[in-house]
Length: 149
Image (cartoon, rainbow, N blue to C red; front, top):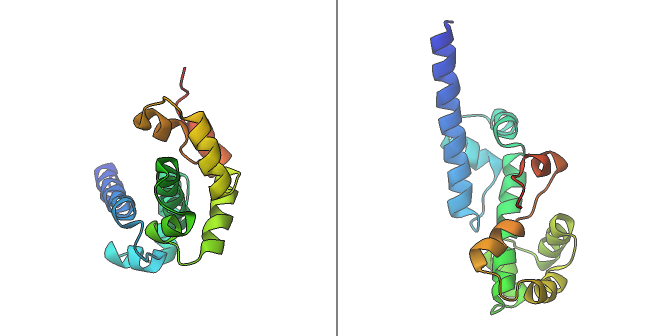
């Protein structure tokens, strides 16, 4: 295979991976699984998971969970929905699973986060609060984040 063909294939694969990531971003609250995401781009689930992790630093499932928790954080900061309502709004089917994942990623329960966020974000514009409070699943991703001065 020529270098040009290899480059074209790599670009095609990146385009497909971007479609998967965009679909997760759009449909995070829907029931999504790696198999259906893979079918949508004509890949096997294993291949999609491996290539997605290489491209984005985490598996499609992990990215989906991070997206859901990120959206939950926004809703918790807003303060007008109950934790249970937020759980179902962002796509979880169980309050226990939601609370466990949230605590795992954020380091505190959803209720504790709501209280802390209300205290910490007083007077901070929502667009800034979203950026500085984005959950980070792994240390590799943390080292790639731009540092705010």
